Amino acid sequence: MPFFRQGEVTTIDPDTRSLTLSNGDVMGFDYLVIATGSTTALPTEIFSVSGADARRKIAEIMPDYAAAKRVIIVGEGPVGVEMAGEYRDLSPDIEITVVSSADAPMTTVGNPKFSARVANLLMRQNINRIGGKTVREMGDTHVILSDGTRLDGDIVVKAVGITPIQVGSNLSHLTGWTGAVRSA
Image 1 (cartoon, helix red, strand yellow):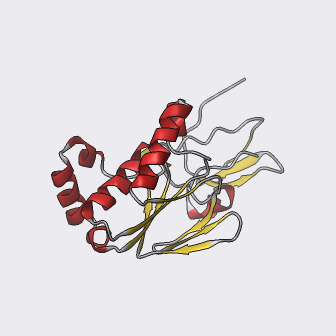
Image 2 (image 1 turned 90 degrees about the vertical axis):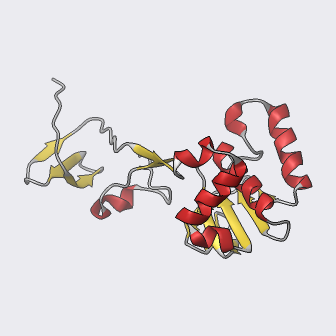
């Protein structure tokens, strides 16, 4: 008989299909849904203002972002492409690299012709693209790709759109670099 129980999970054991709550109760499960919620990668009010105002807001919120000369953007959806464009508008001299697990930008739109146009636009704007690679590790100034390639920059922008709310550190072995819970 299914039931609902709210509480803080302190451990999950996929092998025994059980979890322990902070009050010490142990519960078994056939299927476990971990629903932590999510947040956006950047404050959404940035995207509701003009380009000049967006740049000012970015500079206010993240001073390092406005001063960067080598930028790595992780994510090539609408947020990542917009961030790449904003950086290009700041200066033609900024080295911008966009990294994506998808082979083409903006694949979430579902239109290959649109993706091709966006890729062409990024190329014309001298924005480097690395597609078809996942990020294995991400720091403040570097990323390491699935093939072991290390990219260094002044700043790394996490622009993967929606970011899962992190599970507790005692459950971090169940998550990938984005904080999303991996499927078993």
